[in-house]
Image (tube, rainbow, N blue to C red; front, side, top):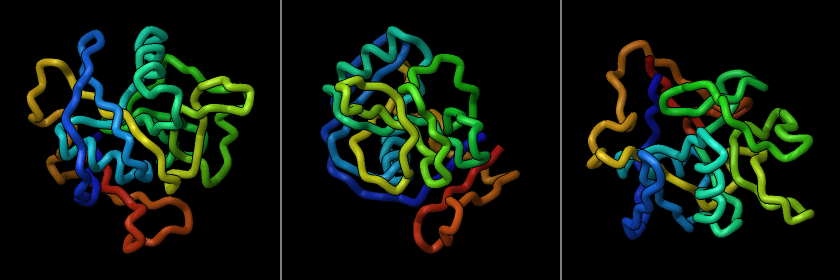
Length: 174
């Protein structure tokens, strides 16, 4: 499955950092989760999918311990957390204790600094504005890294209570 979002303009300097088979960019412009995903897609990337403890440590240091969106959500089904674009299972986890708390409005994943200075994953309302981390494969040169979909077998998804014109909906395609 792939997700397409509305177009959004943002000024970013392209500064990718390599780790393993991927490149990452930490963007310090605060956006909601949907707009962050849009910006990543505009650069031929996606919000980061964290697959290992080593990758997680790298991303934590890259974000300088500031709250930042990464690419998982449970928008499609409450409590069923998946990496988005494409929808894939989460095998490695780094949730703070009592997270995700599965609040009905907390549907998107971020790195979050908790009062105890612990920096772990949390579920937050997708409409909050945070920094974010984009990723793409090293050999990718901005070409179709999940940034587009065929447009077939698509459905619109909106957060509970949101209307499509509010800009809080997305299109998910197989």
